[in-house]
Image (cartoon, rainbow, N blue to C red; front, side):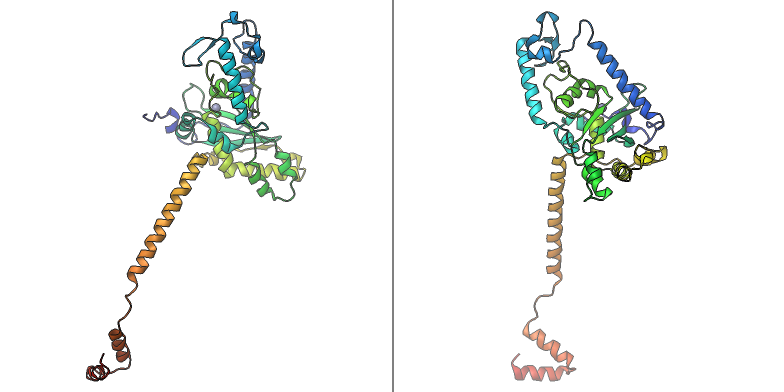
Length: 344
Ligand SMILES: [Zn+2]
């Protein structure tokens, strides 16, 4: 399949970022608008398939549709049974209590990873408050007027990191980014495909979604939108995120109320977005390690061969004699005489 490049991939590094000041309000407004639209969808002749429907109270007269099996068609009792099974399967994939950043990368669909790698190249922390990190990524440019997305990443073990006296603040931050977390993204993919999975999987950081994604994602496949994948990759490896967590942990340990909420400055954010790294799954890391080991082994073998090639072959007795004679300053006549006498 030919690579489809997002419009966003050719943007200069920071043209999408906009102002950091006011970004928290924008994020809040977007999540609020999402919640209000969702509440509206629940009114009257709702098309939401909720837990009551799934448990057997579904009235076929409502004529809700699904795309399970590939085509848009009315939901049957068999579909409801399939949905219940899908919920069970998805539930067993996640342990509840959060999901690790690496797991989000590993359990995601190849299409989301591809989009994240090609289109969502930048992310920066924007703030931290009460155990929740706010992140901003660039948007792919597919939605007019939207140049950035907001993500909330909650660390439920933040207080543990604060209170673990055996760790320095730096160690505590490095530990925290490897622990289970909860997240939420303001994009449509998260809203219609994944927020339900995040809810039943126990790693949703925003409003819970209880309506089964019967049209967009009836098989409950995947887990993270492209923004979440970029965000998780950064949580795992970015120095700027560890730095924010370290500052927050330090403030909490020092009971420094003035610094417990962190606002990232515009210049800090602009410096951060130039540094987004390659998004790697565990599989990518494994194959990179194998390749590195093979490369190292080949390099060692080549060095060894080179060493053997330059080492002179063992000297013959005649050569040893010549060398000894030369070091003694003998003339060639004397050497010839000695050689005749010694039979060398
Ligand atoms: Zn998203």
